[in-house]
Image 1 (tube, rainbow, N blue to C red):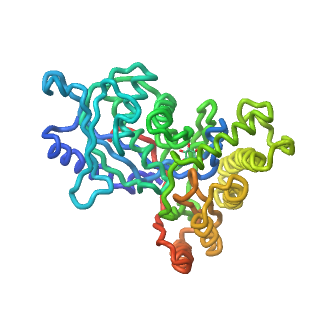
Image 2 (cartoon, rainbow, N blue to C red):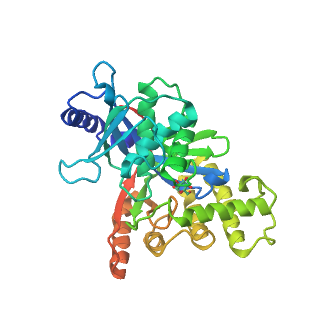
Image 3 (cartoon, helix red, strand yellow):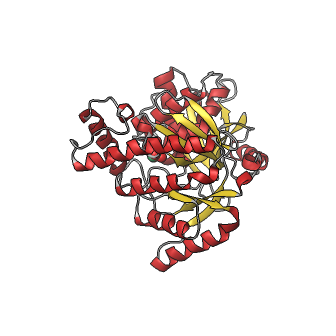
Length: 402
Ligand code: GLA
């Protein structure tokens, strides 16, 4: 199982990133840090309701090579300049560049993907009182963009672990999760919860992260897929999604309205069997999803603690149905991927992440992988839809220095 992280040739990637850094910036980096993407096994749209989630960090990650500016070596007027370059999504040896200054940083001051590192700097300044010097950074990532696997959170987490080490900040994992959430909410402008950063920061090789999103108490629950002859297949529909769009925040505010109408601070404080009949129909559906989903997370955790990995499939299917029918964040492509995988023998399948596109996951027996892949591809081809990207993932360790 420790093949999980090692399935990625991390040392090779780190060395080639360091070499490239020296070419681009003319100096060696101070180090290379890695932060993984995630899939969520179950517990969707529960994080911002102070509920439970069960994601795992995956063996696809963002790497950043970073060098802090030195007052004695860098021109004085560049002391607070951050230069960013990325190989991500570029053809051949192309790079995408961005730049900002850490001094006087305000939301909107960095364009495009530069907003993620800038958001982290902003969070450190605003919430942790850290004075962040300028730095040079080169990014490379194997987390597909827009697939709902937290590619942007992986960038934020890689930056915060790098700055935490280089500046000797002594932040713990929960603290870094809260800071990157602040970056995402206040700087990037996406009203997301705390699951994705936490998975990237606290993931454990071979396990899923059972996280209480209120306290950030975390437990590593073993997910020995290979021992059970199982795999998790990601089905990226390649339908773009964005949590800065209205659908996500509309769901979030419906949940808040529901909690208020039920006299609770958050849906976490509403009992699973509460009487919802007084709520308007839409809010009732949203609340029903969240209450049921928290229970399903607890049930999956129980099964996994008992070593019954094969037994979680039905709970995954129930989660998908609830997200599709009650929370209404699925889409035809996600539904088709789930249905096709189940029809081809998957033990369970569901959309993963915020929805409105992105990826679904299927829990499959390893020997059926080719059959499931073929069935999903055929179903999309029949509809004349864009071919989904299919790949398996393993639970990997959380972020750190390489
Ligand atoms: C996105 C957000 C998370 C979480 C999920 C839904 O991935 O970033 O905080 O709310 O959607 O579970």
